[in-house]
Image (tube, rainbow, N blue to C red):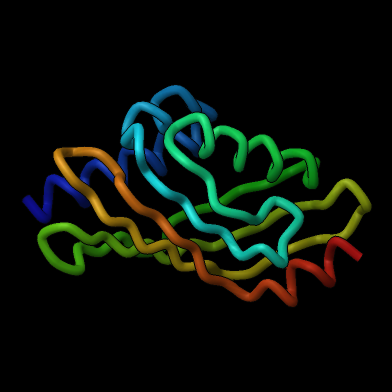
Length: 129
């Protein structure tokens, strides 16, 4: 079960890097909750696949270029997966962002049921200027 969950999360990140947002949204449970620090312009709590799509839309509104590349995808236990990712981007205001973020996922029945991200929001806010 733990490796299956790692594969699901890795697959979602791979789909995101290809720009295949539909495949990302397919692995998010209807009642999933995604939490992003509210100090960021794209932050908040998002519900289900539609909410996650809203998060991605808000994120893209702030950047002309953005990549998030997983450096580690680890099964923490039977239901949790942790991703440490390198974030790089160019803001619409011309600033650059380069930082790391950690995502913690909880999976149920082969779907992401809960997700939360942690990172250096001060660095990102400075780049947004």
